[in-house]
Image (cartoon, rainbow over all chains, first blue to last red; front, top):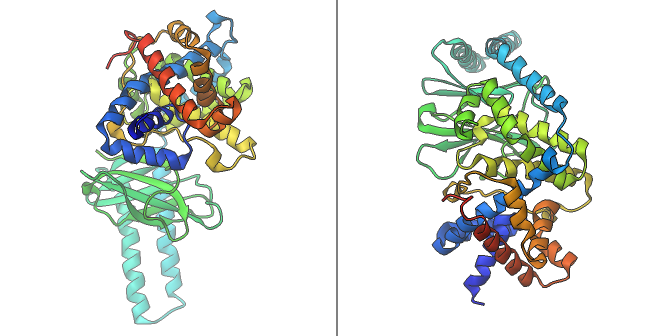
Amino acid sequence: MSPHDEMLDVVAAYALGVLPPQEASAAIDHLKTCEACQAEYRLLQPAVTAVAYSAEACADPASGAAVVSPLLKARIMKRVRGEEKRPQVPRVWLAYAAAAACLAFAIVTGLLDVSLNARLARERAQSSLQAQTIADFMAPDSKHRQFHDGEVLMHGQRLYIAMHNMPMPPKGKVYQAWTLTKGAKSVAPSMTFMPSAGGMTVVRLPEAATTLAAVAVSVEPEGGSLQPTTKPIAMVTLQ
Amino acid sequence: MEDASRLMERVRAHDADAFEALYDGYHRLVYGLALRVLSDPGAAEDVTQAVFLKIWDSPALFHGGNFGAWIARVTRNRAFDVIRSRSARAEGEFPESLPLDDTLEDTAIANVDGARVRDALARLPAEQREPIELGFFGGVTHQEIARQIGLPLGTVKTRIRSGLRRLRNALEGAVSV
């Protein structure tokens, strides 16, 4: 067996999903550059999907298996129908706007204790930024994309991530945003952030909204990462 | 059923009817796969609920391609998460099953006939079927398969490839490229 035949065997193991993470990464790297292995992967991948479909028998009454409980569907659809009938966007966005307003208020009340002009100028700038954030939230021509428990909002070149019900990340971890520039093949690191005690987050990304194709958020070590080290908790395309 | 990719476009717009059609079309695959991996009807229902609500909450996770292959991968990973949470095994001992490159998009499968698929799988020689089923449903790496079957790693990988090729040939006609 030639070394490349051995690689084709590795591709089969990768297609089946039985490689440990490190070997799977190596297989992906090889697949990116080897047309023969890409062809083998494409040949075998439908067979792997067929293996998955063979498990349908476990839920097929015709084969004597237990029927999936209709209560399961009822539970799922209850939540889905409930959300469909009660679009949460206005309520949620009012909450985000309120969160941004509270930040502005905190900045203003902080000024009572400090009289340094430099501090005053800096705080005014921050206050102005908060006001702009609120205006962007409420602008009728802003564009919204659903994003986990929240949304990504675009208004002109400005881009915000607003999320609620966010758990605090594990100790030593932070949330990190990732952006995919139009035409790029890999994501770039953006800012890191933490939710408020109530699980609310409103952050403005520094990137220009119109230059981006997608945004994602993952949990990363403090200080952030250059490449995602965990699966994104949320991802959205912006077209 | 309407094409799954079109249904997913409607789900992105929060269309509950489209979501229900997807559930009706794919819940047996999701539940059956979760049950096969977990051997626990309650846990399989939990996985099924989690998978479908994830689709509702984050439809953008589906980038196109073969929806059945995608939802099967999501389900398998979710079921493995359950095993992982119950297990003392180290993270590196679990397999990684996500194709991460869009250029290797799933090949379409048309008119999947479950009975035909099961028959094709059953007709594989046991020496090929065993490592395939153990690996796909068991949440173990190829090294663990080799250990459990008692064969060299290279032999296991070759048998997996031979088995998948034979299965692919047996499904000719049910698979469109």
